[in-house]
Image (cartoon, rainbow, N blue to C red; front, side):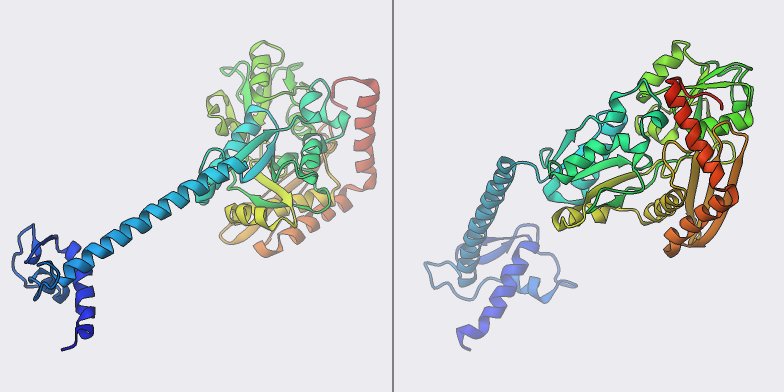
Length: 424
């Protein structure tokens, strides 16, 4: 039989020899090292590999042994070259700088969210696993700098994103990581919120200065000072306890807790998501359900904003998006947009996907909590934008344009008097 016809058998022997636990012995070919044992149930390829080679034309070394040795040398050489190329590639990538640069605010919570984004990217893409592959660039915003003035007085939500927008538009960063509740409904041109990470608990929490006596909004004694920079929270607090007084209370979570412990106020309210992301849940006196305090639009959602034409970055970011969160937040932001809402307006809204349907609850209130307009909607997840927009238009029509004008007048009066926001 021609030699060529035997090559496939030799190839099978090569493949099977290692699996059979065999070594190469001159003049004998492959020899089992673990005991040949019975051949019953053993594949024909393995059995064939265990048999000595029929001939040894090259100095007593069987042909198949020569093939094995040659193959081993070639394989070893290839592995060495691949490893060398991989090492050179990694070194070149490091020398060339980060693969992605993300922009973020510098607060402890913002940084916790930025590192969460970096971790998820590293887990999803091997080339981003190296610590230097994703750079975190801290950008200070106006909202972080002007802590002595309420958000309503100095312009609303854009205060936390303007400088980040500039960095994104100028390509200083590839994308920005946001607490989505701080993002205006109208983005700068040619950018988009491309990704929503899985949402954290959206509820608010009460943090009481006297947790033994004050465990809910109604427990605060008359005249108690409650620290909050949010007109949304202020309105809902006043609706349940009109005899307290809300005062401007800004700063990061740690700053607010220090002020509370120092006795500046009797209590404050924070997003539960922020406490959980920093492992500070123990400070919560009570987690408030939606009927006690309806959360802010997009609360608990981390989003990525990037340039719409940057396919390279989009290919990294979009696979991380959580669909239910994306649709829920899209619905809420459509609701907010229909009401022309920002931090100057006491608006709350939450959407959630339940059994394949989207459920929305929303409200608009006067700053003193005396007027509250509520709405609820249910519909298809694919119609998230329409559900939110229709709910917003419904409330706008019910409340009337005079109501919204009165809210703006209230904010302007507070700003003109340069006082802390109090009950109107």
